[in-house]
Length: 170
Image (cartoon, rainbow, N blue to C red; front, side, top):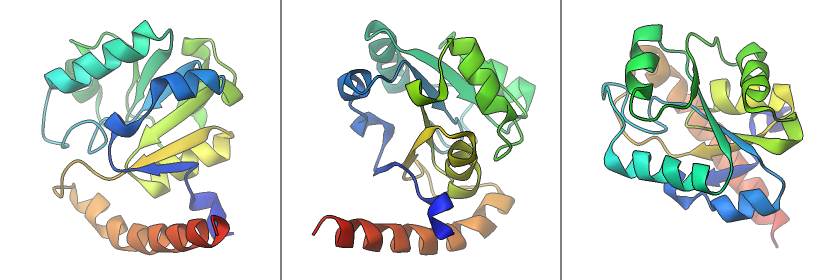
């Protein structure tokens, strides 16, 4: 029951993602959340590290889509320098936007992975859509009020997930 909230992978940062490994596993598209996955929710634009990382992903032949619950203005402004597919007001954890992202990238669900910082939107939505997920530690402690409320429960799920992983790896 609780396993529906477990990510496929749990990393400290997007920069721990090994693009070549994903490619070898048959991944052709990466769906990224924006807020607190790539930048703090109050930063309007991607930094140079993100721009460079996205270039590296594209050079490896993978497609990218931003899927955010945030507004059109926020997502369009953030995407100006990245120039990737982007979906706003996606209503995660509903799966409609994830399916649309797959369509845009020309991927099957087995050929994509979702990267986000929230269990109850990114991971749960990805799991419902049948897409692998990477949960990353939020890039900032600053959150919108609604997200702050969920973080306490998320910590409990992560603790249980890590305990399961340790017992599985013995």
